[in-house]
Image (cartoon, each protein chain N blue to C red):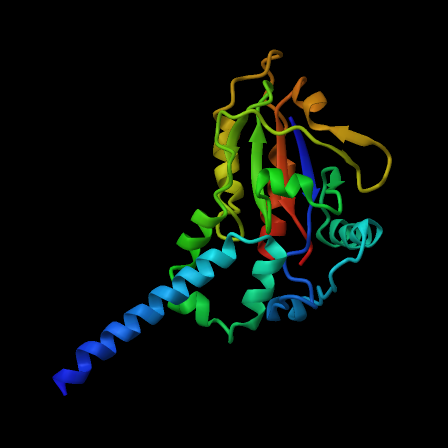
Length: 132
Length: 103
């Protein structure tokens, strides 16, 4: 089992759609102007929220976000055949780690018969969801 | 009085329907366009007046469904240590993708 964060375009950059809650949490960023700036904000995000699994950076043309309709946040589970096993509803309303947990439990068992390790990433996911 | 009430209610209904259609259409635009529209709305008016979550869930449903092949991508890790190709990973194991941003 692999967990990947896909860092996409900002949901509430200060120059577009500022949120009071983000001012309160001191998470105020203007829209990154290029890939490098996006990577700086993403780096701050990963450090601050303590995201435990690897983060990928979407291209500045947002091709992965577009393919998956990922904005502002969303969860997918892809099975070992490369097919979508679970797709959350669009966030923020549809961002529900507990739905992912139940989808993970319905995956066919791995060949080795061991339970996939997902407790810790799931816990950190619920935690980051609460902080937003 | 009755003479004015019915036309007034009809106008109200048309305004409400037009507003709903406008927001619903904005939700189908690229995220940044939608965000700019929302930023112009006074306070939580849109959230309170409209069935926002239902409209959003429909507008952002996307084309992918459970059972579909996951679109492949190849993206650089944030720490720039390597490029990760989704299909190479899913060939070995299931993969969870968590889309999001800081703000």
